[in-house]
Image (tube, helix red, strand yellow):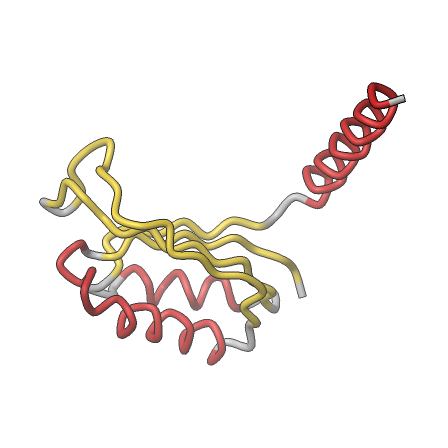
Length: 116
């Protein structure tokens, strides 16, 4: 299973009933054999441009583990879901995580040198 990141822009009118929209996305992921590693509600934000007549959206972020055929199935369902006005599903780059870990390690080493 590969790791993916999914960001869903939920319709702003559903801000008070966000649970139903997120439950639908979670059920979709689990129905396709996926596992949610992390999820975060990033709140209501102004969009850079109008999407489907909306100037705002509620951003919801997921980190997932999905089998090979699941991304295509999830994308096809999210394309026709009314709650999601836009989404982005991308594979995580393992090299990026390694570089971030190295950067943090270097920063920690520099801090310990400064303390001495």
